[in-house]
Length: 77
Image 1 (tube, rainbow, N blue to C red):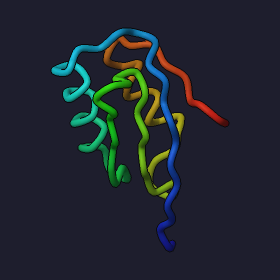
Image 2 (image 1 turned 180 degrees about the vertical axis):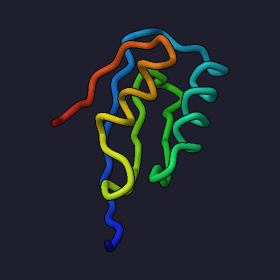
Image 3 (image 1 turned 30 degrees about the vertical axis):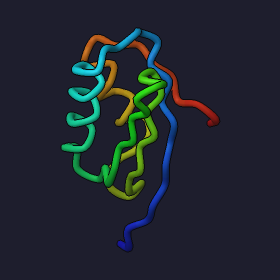
């Protein structure tokens, strides 16, 4: 199966400090199928995740975040 590319924006409800934002982004980057995670310094509650939808789903990515005790939503879906 050929790989593809998609991206999603995730809104995290909690206020995250820089260390926690980095932790969450690194966790997502380590997930199979996730190609990149962009975390804006001035908008720590928004993450843009680039991923291969043949390897991981947007629901799986959101679940990774909620497994960390955070609450979030996929934006624009």
